[in-house]
Image 1 (cartoon, rainbow, N blue to C red):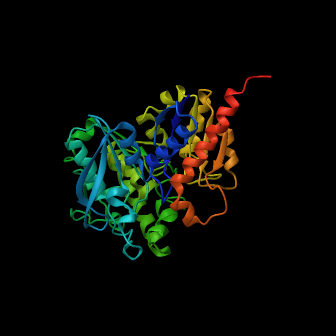
Image 2 (image 1 turned 90 degrees about the horizontal axis):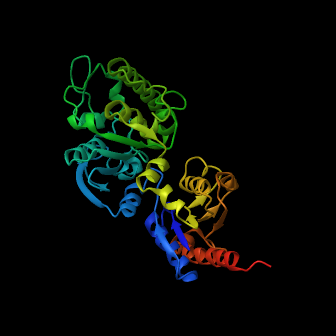
Image 3 (image 1 turned 135 degrees about the horizontal axis):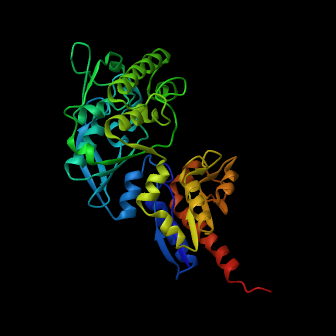
Length: 381
């Protein structure tokens, strides 16, 4: 029996790699002769670097860059092979780097994310994956652009200061000193939302309040992003205002398209392609996946749904094990998921489930494989 183990992380307790290892221990207890293919995954958000580095036996590179409020931070990105690097914008520009009282989307910058991209380009990487989730910023990638050599100036030809609020003064975008390697690089933005840059469904209105913006600040930032988007369209000829996904990560989606020539792609698709997941699933007898919780939203681009769809395409059964099965998780059956189980084996608190997640996941996988063995080895009557 050949089993592919393709979970996402279990938030606050297990990385995707730790989850895959726990599943593997359970499988081997029930089927010692099974061959295992560990394929830890992510959907472009937190854990993308760890998942891809583990899957590719890659390396991590640590760089000191500019944090969201200008302070130095130590950020890590992944190296998958001689040409491919993977970056999480949250490592340099994420909300987790700030306390709640420090959050200020008017001045937070993506400059550090641009420094990570520049570092990867300077070291010869030309295929770069950027996961854009968990941002503290609302600057539409303006800071990133500045770190990559673009000049953003006001009517007095002064460089704009950091943050989304300053974009209300944008007069000119000067691309004459943009990083030369951008022209030959393929940059893939792993993006799991389809919000436009501006408007009621845009970056400022939908995500600004999570980053500390009150109603007045939301309106200010939305107007500033609209002016910046219009300047991009007028001066660079790149349409971003109505582009689905442009509002991701405080508008970084728009910035990556405008300044890096990036493609906005579903995060799961980017990660799955990078680890050759479809080929690996096609060779399997069974696929085990999972994440912290399955619900009605899981089918909208989350890892278990993507795994189930690939398994269905190749006629391979897929089973998910999650911390919780919430209302609506049954929609995953339409994606191709064979069955889903909770790892909780009795009444317990959330703290207990988080503490014992690895052991519970191992036990659940053991029981799943016991049932699988019974179903596949019983002789017909």
